[in-house]
Length: 267
Image 1: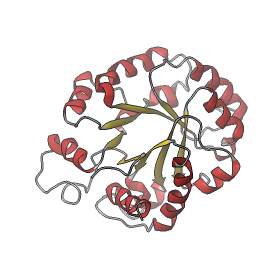
Image 2: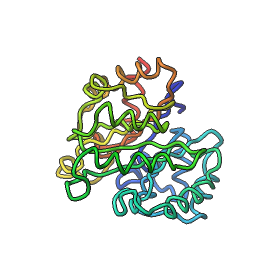
Image 3: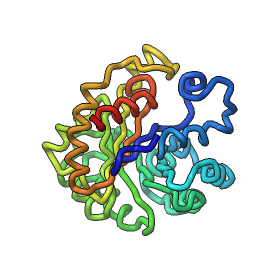
Image 4: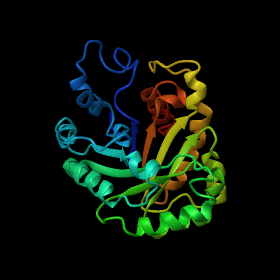
């Protein structure tokens, strides 16, 4: 099941409670999940790397279980983004990159996912940019990076310009307290490099009050995804490649969200 031309579609992680029997065939061994997943989607966002740098053997296993042309996006470990807040973390980042190099040509964009910063971390957007700008300047060449922030008032043209200066993608997210993609696009140019990184995240707290088993859609996201189709078509028309990942928390089942978007996109 290949993605439409110019856009890669996948889910955030390739395992979840409720997927065996709904996405994965009943009785399939977990060791076979990724190989099966790669017959349905041509990319995946690795969520597990947020918690720690994986063992080299694990990364080599991911490579071995997927076909040529498959692409892995991955979250940068939280020790860099949440604990050290980009300060004194060169060795952490280098260890992560060296490990992820085992994916070879299947290594796709790497995401700096920042949480919501309170004033104890950074008093304002300018303080954050003062830390971010020199950090991005020193990033090693040969990798693709994206940055996600969750302070909506910081998401402005100046912030986008900093990313653009360093050829880093602005992660475009659909998340409960952040502005919608059409509102972002009306305020600034969302394209900051030669690819765009999309994450459909939703309302984690709200949906977990209804379920924690991710086997079916429980939130109708068709109107939201129709807006995404419209805005991403504009981006694709600029010859920008797109990667988009659906989280289970967005509608209840990541694979179903991807299939709904695909059907709307291909109409």
